[in-house]
Length: 95
Image (tube, rainbow, N blue to C red; front, top):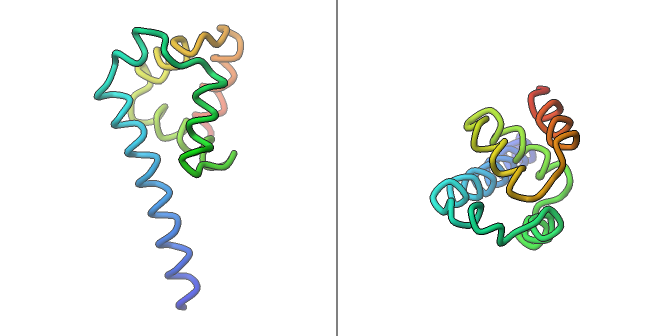
């Protein structure tokens, strides 16, 4: 029981970090507009913040769920080509 509670608390913390990253991005659209961050740099930032591959996937899924148009704009701002954006958004919609 204690292990389940600990695991649940860790998952909640990860989701809170992901939520904060999305909110930060939405509050600072100038980051997108100025093309200050490309895909590689964004991945570095996420990893430095403690995100692993699954965390980053979850982040995209939450972003797509909460703000699909902003997610599209964000991906475009990272200078990702249309084909890759389409793939990211497709798997982001998967449960």
